[in-house]
Image (spheres, rainbow over the protein chains, first blue to last red):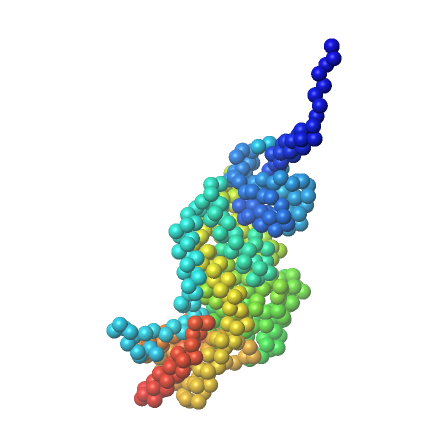
Amino acid sequence: MCSHRHKISQQDIIAREIIFKGVLELTYTLITVSSVTYAMKAKSVLNGAGFYCEIERQEKGSRNGCGYQIRIKDDPAVVCRLLEGRGISCRERKTVER
Amino acid sequence: MPREENGGKMRQVYFDNAATTYPKPPSVVEAVKTALEKTGGNPGRGGHSYALSAAKAVYDVRKKAGEMFSAEPENVCFTQNCTYALNLAIKGVVSPGDTVVISSLEHNAVARPVYALSKRGVRVEVAAVESTDGATLSNFKELLRPGVCCAVVTAASNVTGRLLPIADIADLCRKNGICLIVDGAQVCGTLPISLSDGINILCTAGHKGLYGPSGTGLLISDGKYELDTIIEGGTGATSGELSQTDFLPERLESGTLNTAGIAGLGAGLDFVRKYGIKNIYSHEAELCAVLEDGLKSLGGFDIYREGERFAPILSFNLRGLSSEELARKLSDEGFALRGGLQCAPLAHKTLGTFPDGTVRFSPSVFSSSKDAAALLSVLKKICKTPR
């Protein structure tokens, strides 16, 4: 028996690309910063440079307690280089899915 | 005019802006009101929207202040007033066995902390302010030698407005590895000053020339000196550790911040930027010149204007009357000027006006030439009255 071969249409390809891109966009990096002041500064610097950034409270794993982190979508290496150039230390970073 | 009746009350004219500016710009009042009504959270305490909204409001003001005084936002610390900022800076830098140099025009905000430190093994030396900047600098040069811990200098006397050569003093400090702390209470918002002048730590009030509410002050650091703390507590950061947070601004901001006051200060900074420091200075200096010329033409007044450059403050006395008596008579006529020592006995000893002090005239952008002329008329009347 011939196996059924599904013909992939151009529309399917576009749809799969959108889904794939969506999955990529659902991956974030969380970067721990020193305090809410540094979080605010990070957001200001990143937004000023055209990067997405949100501030949130660190939920767990904060060694010192009461930590803040920023959530970014872009390449963390690029982002941290930019932040460290402005005196903002990227203390810890981890990639998470939504 | 003060004598005009307004609803049965004499209108008061306020010329004590070196103490605190009044009135405040409507935008400042609005910002405080908005913060109280809408920015409900505690900045740095929690991740909910209220806390983050308050933190954003506070950060925006840090950024504005940093831009005005050439500092990174995280090196802008909020305090209750300039005195608190100076105490945090001086006591943060100086340890027993150190030497501190101050000028002979310092306010008690500097004189008292260093006097207290002198009781704990700190050596305090006073550089006399002379009639010229050159002679004053020579005195500083003699004292600012290697091994001195820090110099604490007012940018302008709160009694006479006399400006000190801060950039030159900063140069001496830099060459000798000395931390320079500047009291900018009488110049911030009125004259250009920033860390780019070579200042390591600039302390100022938020409620004077920056037109913020009372209860606000700033300590602005270049980050080169690590400051010991005199107050410890909750900072919203590094909470799991018993030792105080080791980075600015949180290190020096224990306890809940004055969010509403800081929001008002932000509006004050906007007001100053919009009006223009140059325009503010021109307006206020012009009013001082009008009063100075008028007093000279009246005769009988001593005017304390020894020096080369001045912030818009004018101190004077009427011969035969104490400063407090003259200030009271002016108050009775509807003019608010400050008599006495203005919390600066060291400056008055330098001027030769201790212990009676002087009457101090200090206008703001809201002061008018019409009111300055009215003040002169009243002074003329008092001057002609037998004493």
